[in-house]
Amino acid sequence: MAGEARAGEKIVRFDVAATSVFVVSAVAAAVIFDGAAMTIAAVIALLLFFIGIAAFLWAFWNAVQRSRGEQVAVTQLYLLTGGVAPKRVRNTMWLALSVQCVVGLGTAIARPNASNGSPGNSLALGVLVPILGFGLNGLWAAFHGHYQDRLSDNDQLHRQE
Image (cartoon, one colour):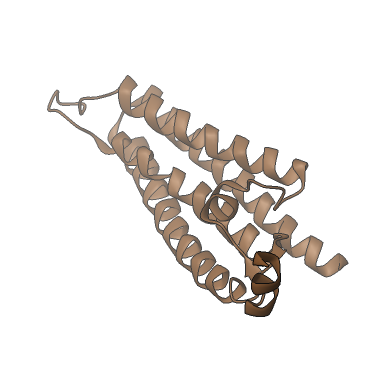
């Protein structure tokens, strides 16, 4: 049980660390607004987005496997609702997801044009980063979440009688 708790904690710590790296790179790129800072922020945003996609799909795959014996809801999986996660884990991961959303949108809105004045710039890629938060929420819940057991067909028949 202690090893399982540590494995779940690694996901939470990675979420917080990755969110911190994203915040620093995106805010620095929005403030400095030059080619190098914007390139670094874009690379970090894309990397986190692709990690998020992989985590999202891995979580879904494992949740489907668990759903054969347990009742797994999508909201429990990706939003950690319904008591699937301890309050500390849920609040930490919700905070990381919220920060990803606010910083991604905020930096994209703060600098809507590229440095040469043309519309759009690399800071807009920050709006993709919340996929990381959803993916890591799902990964945590798929491996460490607590769900109700699925009722067998016989149990369901007895409940209906």
